[in-house]
Image 1 (cartoon, rainbow, N blue to C red):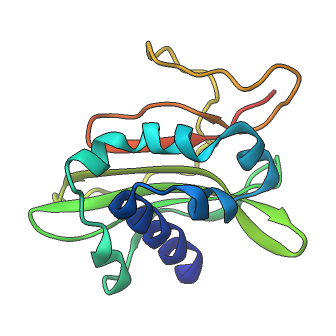
Image 2 (image 1 turned 90 degrees about the horizontal axis):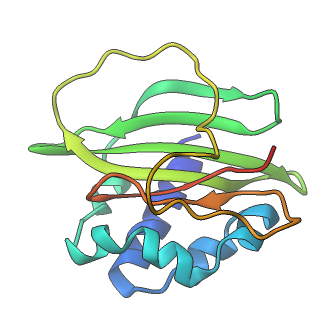
Length: 163
């Protein structure tokens, strides 16, 4: 689990540093790639890039899981947590799809928040595909799969979609 978490968050860090989201997209499951161009992912994480958010600490800090890794009814591996650091911490929620015997990125949400401790939450369903945010982006017609949507300021999120 640690390798999955770190590799994806470091790929996001490098994408934010370079402005090139191709590798992050290429590490993902086919449904994610079909629904999200590298440019679209770049738009979602534009605020992190503009703020020069430094995620490199995920390479050396140990994550604290608030949602232990679990397989959801849709066969996705779902987990959430944070990397504790001061004065802010990196919060994440990740979804992975099984592809040819490997877990591939299917949904990602990353933002920076307070470093105040938070109690673990009870198991929950994966993030809903439909949100009422004004910038909601629908997936291409006829292709169920992940959709991208903007997240809170200083964050970015690419979440699953479909029925």
